Image 1 (cartoon, one colour):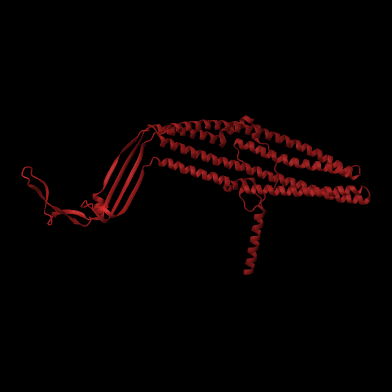
Image 2 (cartoon, rainbow, N blue to C red; image 1 turned 90 degrees about the horizontal axis):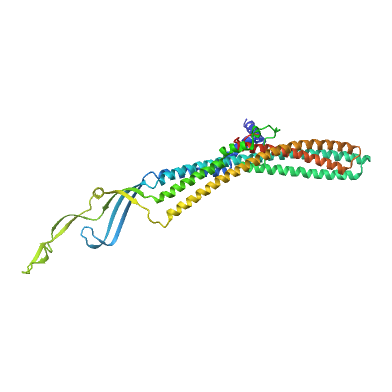
Length: 477
Protein backbone atom coordinates (compact mmCIF):
# COMPACT_ATOMS: atom_id res chain seq x y z
CA UNK A 1 0.00 0.00 0.00
CA UNK A 2 2.86 2.33 0.82
CA UNK A 3 4.42 1.64 -2.57
CA UNK A 4 1.26 2.78 -4.32
CA UNK A 5 1.25 5.92 -2.19
CA UNK A 6 4.88 6.72 -3.08
CA UNK A 7 4.21 6.09 -6.79
CA UNK A 8 1.16 8.37 -6.73
CA UNK A 9 3.10 11.07 -4.89
CA UNK A 10 5.95 10.78 -7.41
CA UNK A 11 3.63 11.17 -10.39
CA UNK A 12 1.87 14.07 -8.68
CA UNK A 13 5.21 15.78 -8.09
CA UNK A 14 6.33 15.22 -11.68
CA UNK A 15 3.01 16.53 -12.97
CA UNK A 16 3.28 19.69 -10.86
CA UNK A 17 6.87 20.22 -12.00
CA UNK A 18 5.84 19.72 -15.60
CA UNK A 19 3.03 22.25 -15.19
CA UNK A 20 5.41 24.72 -13.56
CA UNK A 21 7.87 24.32 -16.42
CA UNK A 22 5.07 24.60 -18.98
CA UNK A 23 3.81 27.86 -17.49
CA UNK A 24 3.87 30.70 -19.97
CA UNK A 25 3.71 34.21 -18.60
CA UNK A 26 1.36 36.86 -19.91
CA UNK A 27 2.39 40.49 -20.06
CA UNK A 28 0.03 41.28 -17.19
CA UNK A 29 1.65 38.60 -15.03
CA UNK A 30 5.14 39.84 -15.93
CA UNK A 31 4.30 43.43 -15.02
CA UNK A 32 2.61 42.39 -11.77
CA UNK A 33 5.54 40.20 -10.75
CA UNK A 34 8.07 42.91 -11.59
CA UNK A 35 6.17 45.42 -9.45
CA UNK A 36 6.68 43.16 -6.45
CA UNK A 37 10.23 41.93 -7.04
CA UNK A 38 12.20 44.42 -9.15
CA UNK A 39 15.28 45.78 -7.33
CA UNK A 40 14.84 49.36 -8.55
CA UNK A 41 11.30 49.42 -7.19
CA UNK A 42 12.48 47.95 -3.88
CA UNK A 43 15.16 50.65 -3.55
CA UNK A 44 12.70 53.40 -4.37
CA UNK A 45 10.26 51.97 -1.83
CA UNK A 46 12.98 52.20 0.83
CA UNK A 47 13.55 55.85 -0.10
CA UNK A 48 9.80 56.39 0.28
CA UNK A 49 9.88 54.90 3.78
CA UNK A 50 12.87 57.09 4.72
CA UNK A 51 10.88 60.15 3.61
CA UNK A 52 8.10 59.03 5.96
CA UNK A 53 10.58 58.88 8.85
CA UNK A 54 11.84 62.38 7.97
CA UNK A 55 8.26 63.59 8.20
CA UNK A 56 8.01 62.13 11.72
CA UNK A 57 11.22 63.98 12.61
CA UNK A 58 9.63 67.25 11.49
CA UNK A 59 6.56 66.54 13.64
CA UNK A 60 8.89 65.82 16.57
CA UNK A 61 10.17 69.43 16.46
CA UNK A 62 6.84 70.51 18.00
CA UNK A 63 7.14 68.06 20.89
CA UNK A 64 9.01 69.18 24.04
CA UNK A 65 12.36 67.53 24.63
CA UNK A 66 12.54 65.68 27.96
CA UNK A 67 15.78 64.27 29.31
CA UNK A 68 16.56 62.56 32.58
CA UNK A 69 19.96 62.24 34.24
CA UNK A 70 21.43 60.46 37.23
CA UNK A 71 24.94 60.06 38.60
CA UNK A 72 26.76 58.46 41.49
CA UNK A 73 30.33 59.44 42.31
CA UNK A 74 33.13 58.46 44.67
CA UNK A 75 35.68 61.04 45.86
CA UNK A 76 38.81 59.38 47.27
CA UNK A 77 41.73 61.25 48.86
CA UNK A 78 42.07 64.80 50.19
CA UNK A 79 38.55 66.25 50.16
CA UNK A 80 36.70 68.87 52.11
CA UNK A 81 34.60 67.46 54.90
CA UNK A 82 31.17 68.96 54.31
CA UNK A 83 30.35 68.71 58.01
CA UNK A 84 33.49 70.35 59.43
CA UNK A 85 34.69 72.32 56.43
CA UNK A 86 38.20 70.86 56.92
CA UNK A 87 40.34 69.07 54.33
CA UNK A 88 40.69 65.41 55.21
CA UNK A 89 41.82 62.18 53.57
CA UNK A 90 38.54 60.38 53.17
CA UNK A 91 36.22 58.62 50.73
CA UNK A 92 32.86 60.24 50.11
CA UNK A 93 29.93 59.31 47.89
CA UNK A 94 27.28 61.47 46.27
CA UNK A 95 24.14 60.66 44.26
CA UNK A 96 22.28 63.17 42.12
CA UNK A 97 19.34 62.95 39.73
CA UNK A 98 17.35 65.38 37.63
CA UNK A 99 14.94 65.94 34.76
CA UNK A 100 15.08 68.74 32.18
CA UNK A 101 12.42 69.88 29.72
CA UNK A 102 12.84 72.24 26.78
CA UNK A 103 10.35 73.48 24.20
CA UNK A 104 10.61 75.85 21.23
CA UNK A 105 8.07 78.64 21.64
CA UNK A 106 9.06 80.65 18.59
CA UNK A 107 11.79 79.87 16.08
CA UNK A 108 11.10 82.05 13.08
CA UNK A 109 8.41 79.60 11.86
CA UNK A 110 11.20 77.22 10.92
CA UNK A 111 9.54 74.20 12.53
CA UNK A 112 6.29 74.85 10.67
CA UNK A 113 8.10 75.24 7.37
CA UNK A 114 10.22 72.15 8.03
CA UNK A 115 7.06 70.12 8.58
CA UNK A 116 5.54 71.36 5.31
CA UNK A 117 8.83 70.61 3.55
CA UNK A 118 8.91 67.08 4.98
CA UNK A 119 5.37 66.47 3.72
CA UNK A 120 6.40 67.66 0.25
CA UNK A 121 9.49 65.43 0.35
CA UNK A 122 7.33 62.44 1.24
CA UNK A 123 5.03 63.32 -1.66
CA UNK A 124 7.99 63.61 -4.05
CA UNK A 125 9.29 60.22 -2.86
CA UNK A 126 5.90 58.62 -3.55
CA UNK A 127 5.88 60.20 -7.02
CA UNK A 128 9.39 58.85 -7.62
CA UNK A 129 8.27 55.36 -6.59
CA UNK A 130 5.33 55.56 -9.00
CA UNK A 131 7.63 56.75 -11.78
CA UNK A 132 10.01 53.85 -11.20
CA UNK A 133 7.05 51.47 -11.33
CA UNK A 134 5.97 52.93 -14.68
CA UNK A 135 9.50 52.77 -16.07
CA UNK A 136 9.82 49.13 -15.03
CA UNK A 137 6.46 48.34 -16.64
CA UNK A 138 7.62 49.99 -19.87
CA UNK A 139 10.89 48.04 -19.83
CA UNK A 140 9.03 44.80 -19.15
CA UNK A 141 6.68 45.44 -22.08
CA UNK A 142 9.64 46.15 -24.36
CA UNK A 143 11.44 42.97 -23.27
CA UNK A 144 8.21 40.97 -23.58
CA UNK A 145 7.64 42.13 -27.15
CA UNK A 146 11.28 41.46 -28.01
CA UNK A 147 10.74 37.83 -27.02
CA UNK A 148 7.66 37.66 -29.21
CA UNK A 149 9.60 39.04 -32.19
CA UNK A 150 12.45 36.58 -31.63
CA UNK A 151 9.92 33.75 -31.50
CA UNK A 152 8.40 34.83 -34.79
CA UNK A 153 11.83 35.19 -36.31
CA UNK A 154 12.81 31.71 -35.10
CA UNK A 155 9.68 30.27 -36.69
CA UNK A 156 10.54 31.96 -39.99
CA UNK A 157 14.14 30.73 -39.91
CA UNK A 158 13.14 27.19 -38.88
CA UNK A 159 10.55 27.00 -41.63
CA UNK A 160 13.05 28.31 -44.11
CA UNK A 161 15.60 25.70 -43.04
CA UNK A 162 13.03 22.97 -43.63
CA UNK A 163 12.28 24.40 -47.10
CA UNK A 164 15.97 24.57 -47.92
CA UNK A 165 16.49 20.95 -46.90
CA UNK A 166 13.59 19.87 -49.07
CA UNK A 167 14.95 21.92 -51.95
CA UNK A 168 18.41 20.40 -51.44
CA UNK A 169 16.97 16.88 -51.62
CA UNK A 170 15.08 17.79 -54.77
CA UNK A 171 18.20 19.34 -56.31
CA UNK A 172 20.15 16.18 -55.52
CA UNK A 173 17.56 14.14 -57.43
CA UNK A 174 17.72 16.60 -60.32
CA UNK A 175 21.52 16.36 -60.39
CA UNK A 176 21.29 12.56 -60.53
CA UNK A 177 18.80 12.86 -63.37
CA UNK A 178 21.11 15.26 -65.16
CA UNK A 179 18.58 18.11 -65.17
CA UNK A 180 20.85 20.59 -63.36
CA UNK A 181 24.61 20.78 -62.94
CA UNK A 182 26.33 19.39 -59.84
CA UNK A 183 27.34 22.92 -58.82
CA UNK A 184 23.71 23.71 -57.99
CA UNK A 185 23.75 20.96 -55.37
CA UNK A 186 26.83 22.49 -53.78
CA UNK A 187 25.09 25.89 -53.73
CA UNK A 188 22.05 24.36 -52.04
CA UNK A 189 24.22 22.64 -49.42
CA UNK A 190 25.82 26.01 -48.68
CA UNK A 191 22.37 27.57 -48.46
CA UNK A 192 21.28 24.90 -45.95
CA UNK A 193 24.40 25.52 -43.84
CA UNK A 194 23.71 29.26 -43.86
CA UNK A 195 20.09 28.64 -42.92
CA UNK A 196 21.19 26.39 -40.03
CA UNK A 197 23.39 29.19 -38.74
CA UNK A 198 20.44 31.59 -38.98
CA UNK A 199 18.36 29.21 -36.86
CA UNK A 200 21.13 29.01 -34.24
CA UNK A 201 21.41 32.82 -34.19
CA UNK A 202 17.64 33.13 -33.81
CA UNK A 203 17.66 30.62 -30.92
CA UNK A 204 20.45 32.54 -29.18
CA UNK A 205 18.62 35.84 -29.64
CA UNK A 206 15.48 34.30 -28.15
CA UNK A 207 17.39 32.93 -25.16
CA UNK A 208 19.06 36.28 -24.49
CA UNK A 209 15.75 38.14 -24.71
CA UNK A 210 14.21 35.68 -22.22
CA UNK A 211 17.18 36.21 -19.92
CA UNK A 212 16.74 39.99 -20.11
CA UNK A 213 13.08 39.79 -19.11
CA UNK A 214 13.82 37.25 -16.38
CA UNK A 215 16.39 39.64 -14.90
CA UNK A 216 13.84 42.45 -14.90
CA UNK A 217 11.51 40.13 -13.01
CA UNK A 218 14.33 39.02 -10.67
CA UNK A 219 13.74 35.36 -11.57
CA UNK A 220 16.59 33.08 -10.56
CA UNK A 221 15.45 30.14 -12.66
CA UNK A 222 15.18 31.48 -16.19
CA UNK A 223 16.05 28.39 -18.23
CA UNK A 224 12.42 27.24 -18.36
CA UNK A 225 11.02 30.78 -18.43
CA UNK A 226 8.73 31.51 -21.37
CA UNK A 227 5.98 33.94 -22.31
CA UNK A 228 2.55 33.35 -23.73
CA UNK A 229 2.76 32.36 -27.36
CA UNK A 230 -0.29 33.44 -29.34
CA UNK A 231 -1.22 35.58 -32.30
CA UNK A 232 -1.25 39.24 -31.30
CA UNK A 233 -3.53 41.28 -33.53
CA UNK A 234 -2.94 44.90 -34.30
CA UNK A 235 -5.90 46.71 -32.78
CA UNK A 236 -6.62 50.31 -33.52
CA UNK A 237 -5.75 52.42 -30.46
CA UNK A 238 -8.12 55.26 -29.62
CA UNK A 239 -5.17 57.26 -28.35
CA UNK A 240 -3.72 57.41 -31.86
CA UNK A 241 -6.84 59.28 -32.97
CA UNK A 242 -5.73 62.13 -30.69
CA UNK A 243 -3.25 64.77 -31.72
CA UNK A 244 0.27 64.84 -30.33
CA UNK A 245 -0.56 68.05 -28.45
CA UNK A 246 -3.58 66.38 -26.82
CA UNK A 247 -1.36 63.56 -25.61
CA UNK A 248 1.20 66.06 -24.32
CA UNK A 249 -1.38 68.09 -22.40
CA UNK A 250 -2.70 64.92 -20.78
CA UNK A 251 0.83 63.75 -19.98
CA UNK A 252 1.72 67.16 -18.53
CA UNK A 253 -0.97 66.71 -15.89
CA UNK A 254 -0.51 62.99 -15.28
CA UNK A 255 3.17 62.13 -15.71
CA UNK A 256 5.16 61.68 -12.51
CA UNK A 257 8.33 63.36 -13.79
CA UNK A 258 6.40 66.65 -14.02
CA UNK A 259 4.81 66.10 -10.61
CA UNK A 260 8.26 65.43 -9.14
CA UNK A 261 9.68 68.62 -10.68
CA UNK A 262 6.74 70.69 -9.39
CA UNK A 263 7.03 69.21 -5.91
CA UNK A 264 10.78 69.87 -5.87
CA UNK A 265 10.01 73.49 -6.76
CA UNK A 266 7.66 73.74 -3.77
CA UNK A 267 10.34 72.17 -1.57
CA UNK A 268 12.84 74.80 -2.74
CA UNK A 269 10.35 77.54 -1.87
CA UNK A 270 10.03 76.11 1.63
CA UNK A 271 13.81 75.99 1.95
CA UNK A 272 13.94 79.73 1.27
CA UNK A 273 11.43 80.36 4.08
CA UNK A 274 13.34 78.06 6.43
CA UNK A 275 16.63 79.83 5.76
CA UNK A 276 15.01 83.25 6.25
CA UNK A 277 13.76 82.09 9.64
CA UNK A 278 17.38 82.18 10.85
CA UNK A 279 17.18 86.02 10.73
CA UNK A 280 14.48 86.09 13.42
CA UNK A 281 14.86 85.80 17.22
CA UNK A 282 13.96 82.52 18.91
CA UNK A 283 12.30 81.94 22.27
CA UNK A 284 12.79 78.72 24.18
CA UNK A 285 11.10 77.63 27.39
CA UNK A 286 12.93 75.43 29.87
CA UNK A 287 12.29 73.63 33.15
CA UNK A 288 14.54 71.45 35.26
CA UNK A 289 14.20 69.46 38.46
CA UNK A 290 17.16 68.15 40.46
CA UNK A 291 17.90 66.51 43.79
CA UNK A 292 20.91 64.99 45.51
CA UNK A 293 22.05 62.85 48.45
CA UNK A 294 25.35 62.46 50.34
CA UNK A 295 26.67 59.44 52.21
CA UNK A 296 28.78 61.41 54.77
CA UNK A 297 27.90 61.92 58.43
CA UNK A 298 25.67 64.90 59.23
CA UNK A 299 25.68 67.55 62.01
CA UNK A 300 22.75 67.15 64.41
CA UNK A 301 23.82 69.67 67.11
CA UNK A 302 26.79 71.01 69.07
CA UNK A 303 28.37 70.56 72.54
CA UNK A 304 31.02 72.55 74.55
CA UNK A 305 34.61 71.68 73.70
CA UNK A 306 36.02 70.22 76.90
CA UNK A 307 39.58 70.18 75.63
CA UNK A 308 39.54 73.82 74.58
CA UNK A 309 36.50 75.40 76.26
CA UNK A 310 37.22 79.01 75.26
CA UNK A 311 38.65 80.87 72.34
CA UNK A 312 40.15 84.40 72.33
CA UNK A 313 38.52 86.51 69.67
CA UNK A 314 40.11 89.86 70.54
CA UNK A 315 41.20 92.33 73.28
CA UNK A 316 39.56 95.30 74.96
CA UNK A 317 41.14 98.54 73.77
CA UNK A 318 42.69 100.45 76.64
CA UNK A 319 42.78 97.64 79.21
CA UNK A 320 44.20 94.90 77.02
CA UNK A 321 41.82 92.39 78.49
CA UNK A 322 41.14 89.34 76.29
CA UNK A 323 37.68 88.81 74.88
CA UNK A 324 36.80 85.12 74.99
CA UNK A 325 33.86 83.03 73.79
CA UNK A 326 33.02 79.41 74.55
CA UNK A 327 34.12 76.78 72.02
CA UNK A 328 31.70 74.17 70.67
CA UNK A 329 32.21 71.08 68.61
CA UNK A 330 29.58 69.62 66.26
CA UNK A 331 27.67 66.54 67.22
CA UNK A 332 27.79 64.07 64.28
CA UNK A 333 25.29 61.37 63.41
CA UNK A 334 24.89 58.86 60.60
CA UNK A 335 23.63 60.14 57.25
CA UNK A 336 19.92 60.83 56.89
CA UNK A 337 17.85 58.21 55.02
CA UNK A 338 18.47 58.34 51.29
CA UNK A 339 14.92 59.18 50.24
CA UNK A 340 14.64 61.81 52.98
CA UNK A 341 17.70 63.54 51.50
CA UNK A 342 16.20 63.38 48.00
CA UNK A 343 13.05 65.01 49.36
CA UNK A 344 14.89 67.69 51.36
CA UNK A 345 17.39 68.62 48.62
CA UNK A 346 15.02 68.81 45.63
CA UNK A 347 14.93 71.97 43.56
CA UNK A 348 13.18 73.45 40.50
CA UNK A 349 14.33 75.83 37.81
CA UNK A 350 12.30 77.25 34.91
CA UNK A 351 12.23 80.24 32.63
CA UNK A 352 12.48 81.60 29.11
CA UNK A 353 15.54 82.08 26.93
CA UNK A 354 15.68 84.64 24.14
CA UNK A 355 18.27 84.31 21.38
CA UNK A 356 18.73 87.22 18.97
CA UNK A 357 20.98 86.62 15.94
CA UNK A 358 23.34 89.57 15.53
CA UNK A 359 26.47 88.33 13.78
CA UNK A 360 27.04 84.69 12.99
CA UNK A 361 29.71 84.72 10.32
CA UNK A 362 27.20 85.52 7.54
CA UNK A 363 25.90 81.95 7.82
CA UNK A 364 22.24 83.00 7.82
CA UNK A 365 22.72 85.36 4.89
CA UNK A 366 24.67 82.79 2.91
CA UNK A 367 22.06 80.15 3.68
CA UNK A 368 19.33 82.38 2.26
CA UNK A 369 21.34 83.02 -0.90
CA UNK A 370 21.99 79.31 -1.40
CA UNK A 371 18.31 78.47 -0.99
CA UNK A 372 17.34 81.18 -3.50
CA UNK A 373 19.78 79.76 -6.05
CA UNK A 374 18.38 76.28 -5.41
CA UNK A 375 14.92 77.72 -6.06
CA UNK A 376 16.04 79.09 -9.40
CA UNK A 377 17.60 75.74 -10.24
CA UNK A 378 14.29 74.00 -9.46
CA UNK A 379 12.44 76.41 -11.76
CA UNK A 380 14.86 75.60 -14.56
CA UNK A 381 14.50 71.87 -13.84
CA UNK A 382 10.71 72.12 -14.11
CA UNK A 383 10.97 73.92 -17.45
CA UNK A 384 13.45 71.32 -18.68
CA UNK A 385 11.19 68.48 -17.54
CA UNK A 386 8.27 69.96 -19.47
CA UNK A 387 10.44 70.38 -22.58
CA UNK A 388 11.75 66.81 -22.29
CA UNK A 389 8.22 65.48 -21.87
CA UNK A 390 6.97 67.44 -24.88
CA UNK A 391 9.85 66.16 -27.01
CA UNK A 392 9.34 62.57 -25.84
CA UNK A 393 5.59 62.66 -26.48
CA UNK A 394 5.94 64.10 -29.98
CA UNK A 395 8.75 61.63 -30.70
CA UNK A 396 6.66 58.69 -29.45
CA UNK A 397 3.64 59.85 -31.45
CA UNK A 398 5.71 60.24 -34.60
CA UNK A 399 7.43 56.89 -34.05
CA UNK A 400 4.07 55.13 -33.63
CA UNK A 401 2.74 56.55 -36.88
CA UNK A 402 6.00 55.74 -38.59
CA UNK A 403 5.92 52.19 -37.25
CA UNK A 404 2.40 51.71 -38.63
CA UNK A 405 3.52 52.91 -42.07
CA UNK A 406 6.55 50.62 -41.86
CA UNK A 407 4.34 47.66 -40.98
CA UNK A 408 1.95 48.33 -43.85
CA UNK A 409 4.91 48.69 -46.22
CA UNK A 410 6.40 45.44 -44.90
CA UNK A 411 3.12 43.62 -45.62
CA UNK A 412 3.15 44.85 -49.20
CA UNK A 413 6.82 43.91 -49.55
CA UNK A 414 6.36 40.39 -48.19
CA UNK A 415 3.49 39.73 -50.58
CA UNK A 416 5.65 40.85 -53.50
CA UNK A 417 8.62 38.81 -52.29
CA UNK A 418 6.45 35.75 -51.83
CA UNK A 419 5.14 36.04 -55.39
CA UNK A 420 8.68 36.51 -56.68
CA UNK A 421 9.87 33.50 -54.72
CA UNK A 422 7.05 31.29 -55.98
CA UNK A 423 7.86 32.37 -59.54
CA UNK A 424 11.56 31.62 -58.93
CA UNK A 425 10.67 28.13 -57.68
CA UNK A 426 8.76 27.45 -60.87
CA UNK A 427 11.62 28.68 -63.05
CA UNK A 428 14.20 26.75 -61.02
CA UNK A 429 12.14 23.58 -61.25
CA UNK A 430 12.25 23.65 -65.04
CA UNK A 431 15.87 24.71 -65.21
CA UNK A 432 15.22 28.31 -66.29
CA UNK A 433 16.99 29.79 -63.22
CA UNK A 434 20.31 28.92 -61.65
CA UNK A 435 20.70 28.13 -57.96
CA UNK A 436 22.35 31.48 -57.11
CA UNK A 437 19.42 33.56 -58.38
CA UNK A 438 16.99 31.16 -56.72
CA UNK A 439 18.74 31.49 -53.38
CA UNK A 440 18.71 35.26 -53.73
CA UNK A 441 14.95 35.27 -54.25
CA UNK A 442 14.53 32.97 -51.29
CA UNK A 443 16.72 35.13 -49.01
CA UNK A 444 14.78 38.26 -49.93
CA UNK A 445 11.53 36.50 -49.07
CA UNK A 446 12.86 35.35 -45.67
CA UNK A 447 14.12 38.84 -44.88
CA UNK A 448 10.75 40.28 -45.82
CA UNK A 449 9.01 37.87 -43.41
CA UNK A 450 11.37 38.93 -40.61
CA UNK A 451 10.73 42.58 -41.44
CA UNK A 452 6.99 42.03 -41.06
CA UNK A 453 7.43 40.46 -37.61
CA UNK A 454 9.82 43.18 -36.52
CA UNK A 455 7.57 46.00 -37.78
CA UNK A 456 4.52 44.40 -36.15
CA UNK A 457 5.93 44.23 -32.63
CA UNK A 458 7.71 47.55 -32.98
CA UNK A 459 4.38 49.17 -33.83
CA UNK A 460 2.69 47.49 -30.85
CA UNK A 461 5.40 48.81 -28.52
CA UNK A 462 5.38 52.32 -30.00
CA UNK A 463 1.61 52.54 -29.50
CA UNK A 464 2.04 51.30 -25.93
CA UNK A 465 4.51 54.13 -25.30
CA UNK A 466 1.98 56.70 -26.56
CA UNK A 467 -0.72 55.13 -24.36
CA UNK A 468 1.76 55.20 -21.49
CA UNK A 469 2.12 58.98 -21.83
CA UNK A 470 -1.65 59.27 -22.09
CA UNK A 471 -2.01 57.57 -18.71
CA UNK A 472 -3.08 54.06 -19.82
CA UNK A 473 -1.27 51.36 -17.78
CA UNK A 474 1.03 48.97 -19.62
CA UNK A 475 -0.19 45.54 -18.58
CA UNK A 476 -1.95 44.05 -21.58
CA UNK A 477 -1.44 43.70 -25.32
